[in-house]
Length: 90
Image (cartoon, rainbow, N blue to C red; front, side, top):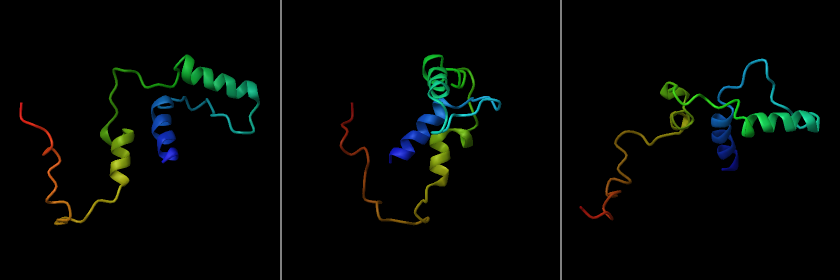
């Protein structure tokens, strides 16, 4: 679960890392890791610009959904569940 959270967070915070910029490893110097963290979180250098929209297959949630196994067509195990039944009409 934590790995999935880190993957989703990194898909946002590291969406546009330039190819010339290598992510530090656990063996990198402290200074190198600090530069990366400041660039990533303080300067927000690697965030995708707000005005661009990646195709659905590149968005983290859609990518996750595409790799998730779905029940076969005709699966009626949850057919009786009405997800909005608890909500009142307004």
